[in-house]
Amino acid sequence: MRYLGSMLVYGVGEKMTRRLAGVVIGCQSLVVFFGTLVAFQLGRTNGEASHSAYLIVGLVLMAACLLAAGSLRRPWGVTLGWVLQLATLASALIVPMMLVVGVIFLALWMTALVQGRTMDRLSADWAAAHPTE
Image (tube, rainbow, N blue to C red; front, side):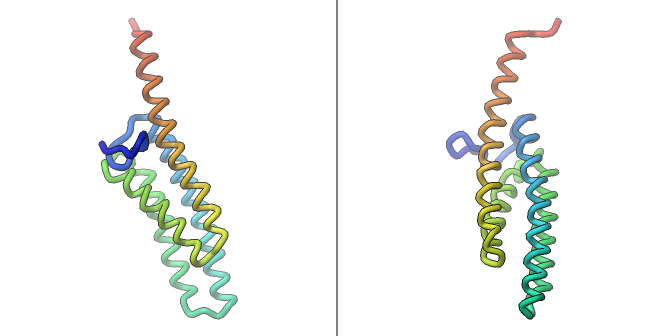
């Protein structure tokens, strides 16, 4: 596993880290889907030829979020989550309000990785102090 400070960058986190990160990236997929619909409709309303591309790329990004939520047991799952955080931030080039969404989900992602690790450590300490008989 590789860490940047106390945040997991590559590898498989423990149980609570995976749960928290999975919830964050799963919810992010819903918000990305709605952002995709906004980008598609704005492009269509403005007569942009690329409005269909907005829809396709947004749906791929949404599916990748769901894939990342399900792949957190794999070493590359967390890394995929980091890439998707950057992609969500980059979607602000099309829909500027996605910058706010991207920053919020980046903060939630970082919190899930840090606090999940803390929760896993506390759970292990409690289990060591209270062995079941």
